[in-house]
Length: 130
Image 1: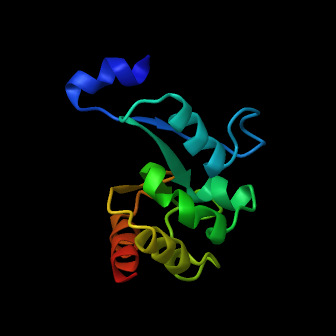
Image 2: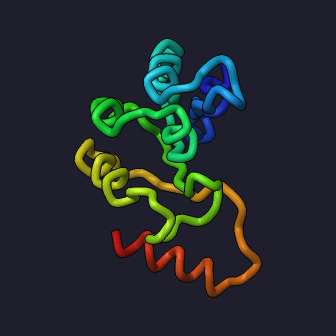
């Protein structure tokens, strides 16, 4: 129903999986994409959120075939903070998997944003370097 309402406005409805501590319905990217596909609407897509993806211990090899079904991507650290090179998360492998799967959509940060704009600028430099 939501996809139908948004379609005339060019909107895409996104089904976001949340890890088990936050949700008991859709926890994995495959479930997100299957739910979107079951809606049978061209403007209903799945989503991968790196935070939830890591907490569900999903693998990049599982993500790769689902990339064409994604309508959006969220990225953040395992602590729900801005990604940085020294936080032990392999952002490059994640982004490389999205590229390999043909994803060319938007990626948004979701998490706590520091009040120090130099840190935010550093985040953008880091992500762009990947």
